[in-house]
Amino acid sequence: MGLLDGKIALVTGIANKNSIAYGIAQAFKREGAQLILTYANEKIGKKIEPIAQELGALDCLEMDVSSDQSIEQAFERIAQKTERLDIVVHSIAFAPAQEFKRPTLYTSREGFKIAMDISVYSLIALAQRAIKLMEGTSGAFLTLSYYGAEKVVPRYNVMGIAKAALESTVRYLAYDLGKMGHRINAISAGPVKTLAARAISGFHLLMKHTMEVSPLGRGIDILDVGNAAVFLCSDWAKNITGEVLHVDAGYHVMGVMDKEEDIENS
Image 1 (tube, rainbow, N blue to C red):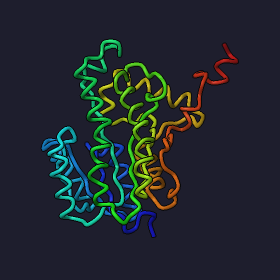
Image 2: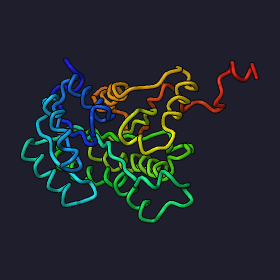
Image 3: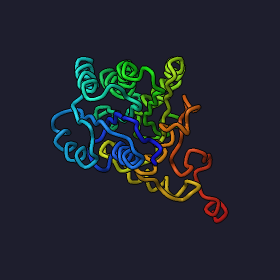
Image 4: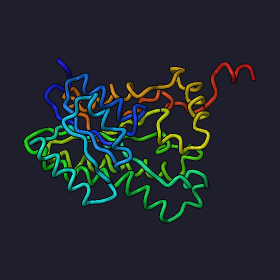
């Protein structure tokens, strides 16, 4: 018997099989959840359809979170497929590529607006629609963050600001959703080689550094995040809301970023 048996989960943000959202969807399926997947546009949809078939998804549909009309149409279709939703996974973040190539000081107004709209407001927009399908249930929302929300990660720039806003949004939504019996949490995942990560210059060095410095001395993969997501969206976490869970091999606890043996030998 799986931890998510009988639950219906909407999973957004799968771009390919390297996506964190794909790892979450895999873990959800393993634990008995039925899945509904979304994609941002037709180009990505062509890549996602085979994944949806592999996962036995109830549906796979287009949803552009920058458009209220597209979100409304997506949820209308979801309502035709199922009378309820138990879980919503928000794995959506975007900023124009040029915003990762210049210092935060020179972030453009338009780039800032886009990053906040797609990476942060979209969580609110999804929650507004999803709660209509969660009446009579104890729903669970989950979003994805990163350490750059807490500390400066060079070249992460405006996305770090957006992730900080996202984590704050989780806390405020926890207050509102809690009155309805729903929960919301975030996972702050360590670096993973995803399509989105390619936008960050020197990402391979960031991964190497994280593995060298983290207390466990290793990196993470998408199934590590998926397993944590199962827990947070299951009834085992029924009294956990408004939290940001780090899945990063302990990297976030480090202050001095050199290993003890390196300091001793210096």
